[in-house]
Length: 189
Image (cartoon, rainbow, N blue to C red; front, side, top):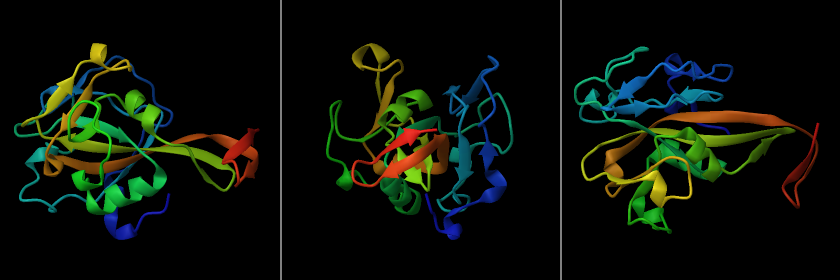
């Protein structure tokens, strides 16, 4: 995935690739923040982009929530859409499927988002991309896990201004011995 450098904020990148969940609970926006263990987060340049930065909460590694902070969610997508979302934000007008009502779909679980992420190739390497967001609680429709086919809930935000991408999470899935452009498949090494 290639992004314009002007969109990135490398000082806030964080590599969760080799980290595992140790049971510590983190809270963002009053909801449990499931850290993206197994992924590398590339930070988007969002500080100063909106009226205020309160929606991001306090900077740094912390377990508690900040006042006015928005919860964290994840949105699985294709590489080409990830680039567009990083550059322009979410555009409800571009969405097509609304199983649980009109809005931008995300989940507090990166595992759920990964299910929707499409594999892509860079050379012989295979990757997935998931967008890390902050979502305003206002009008947020929470679909419980028992109403979804996944292991965690979905969040549907009907206002695309109230879901803000702030990170691109990349997961390396392995290498291919050969890649077939016709079938978009590979032979695993």
